[in-house]
Length: 349
Ligand SMILES: Nc1ncnc2c1ncn2[C@@H]1O[C@H](COP(=O)(O)OP(=O)(O)O)[C@@H](O)[C@H]1O
Ligand SMILES: [Mg+2]
Image (cartoon, rainbow, N blue to C red; front, side):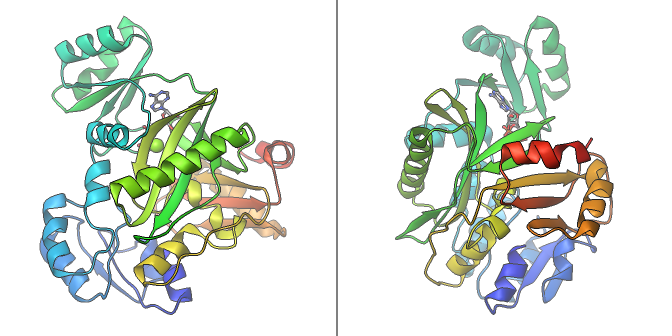
């Protein structure tokens, strides 16, 4: 999706991915098949590019820091470094004006028991690094749940207070060092730890909470001195917002912007990379984005075949279809949460 927008702005792209059938390779002009930690391949990617970005969160820091000295990687390693470890991420959020759930560093039974004593039930155990879509997480509601975390003992982890949130929300921003733009805040509904729906405008959100998310997030971006794209996920409870996690790349909850806004997260990232002025986005109409997981592909194909106006089916072209794997998304423009429930929810299991 980044490569598509780059093309639209007149740029040529080269992508690196470990799999020879990566969806991006169908769109970009040139490609390199190599692991994300292959130093020589990453150097080649940078050498053959005028400007470089990342869309994968686990590019090793020691490689990126070296590459940054030689090549133009305008986002730099800093936002990636700050987000690669859940403890560091939350300490950084707190240090820069954001409220987080209570948390403790844990790594074995003893530290976990101490963490539970301090934080109380219910709480959430998560590995500090490499987690996504709810992987490496255990909700601990009572002593009997502790054994579910046992397989991770020995791995650095975090224990968080379970926030009984009213709903979840996220914001995507792009900064160029002077200006920070942000996309309209979405309300996110997860299923089994995986994003299912993003609804914009957020149906449960008051104007005061929206304002708080926008102001604090932009302020955070400035205080951290980040450039490029950043997404922040929040838990909302009453009038309070809690930082959950962030990602310095286009975010799944921002996929709705392709058709739901007058510019999108991929395009503004590319404009930043190309040194063009950023455009403050506007919502075109109320929009709902539904993720298509492996089990939803048949429904998505049926919906696509109906060719309805304002219904945009994106299938990414991943060759291996697995239940719970993100295979695409559908954007319904001009639809609110009630409309989605009424017309579309029943199409998916
Ligand atoms: N401390 C928490 N309290 C309540 N729910 C949580 C908490 N941490 C995670 N969750 C739930 O699990 C989902 C996934 O967790 P998250 O930390 O965002 O990890 P990732 O998206 O990297 O898998 C969240 O969006 C939320 O629904
Ligand atoms: Mg998340």
